[in-house]
Amino acid sequence: MSSQKKKNLTPTQQKYQAFAKAREPKRPVLLNSIRAFFVGGIICTLGQALQWMYMTYFKFDEVTASNPTVATLIIISVLLTGFGVYDHIAQWAGAGTAVPVTGFANSVCSAAIEHRSEGYVLGVGGNMFKLAGSVIVYGVFSAFVVALIKIILKG
Image 1: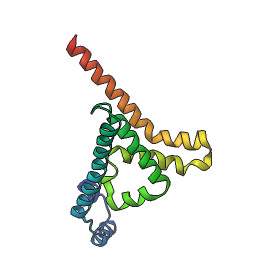
Image 2 (image 1 turned 90 degrees about the vertical axis):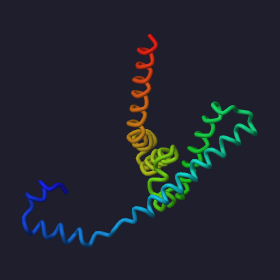
Image 3 (image 1 turned 135 degrees about the vertical axis):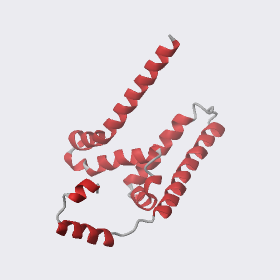
Image 4 (image 1 turned 120 degrees about the vertical axis):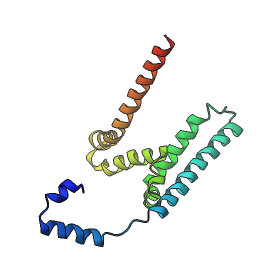
């Protein structure tokens, strides 16, 4: 809370703030960071192993192997979310599961599963794209800006 807001509190409210702060559980920041690093690293290592598999067994090159690798990671994430496993991993690992593409797939899939009782169009489709829509718009806009800068610098 900012110091300006603290000045506007009554003495009773200030006392309560001090009381609540004293009893708030301390967060294990270092342990949470290690867990996030560990699980995020495992996800990235799995992605690298999948990419090598596509390059070795399916004769993709390094550039073209990235698309099926990402698709496979998304499918695994959606399946784990559907079976309820991904949520347990995310609860334990925190941000380690939220940063890679699997975290985004989990978020979209969770929204779809949560609202399936409202129907496929308004429930699943509508709520799934509430989250995905902002990410897609940002991605498209960013691609437009980068392409515009590239055109200006080359022209």
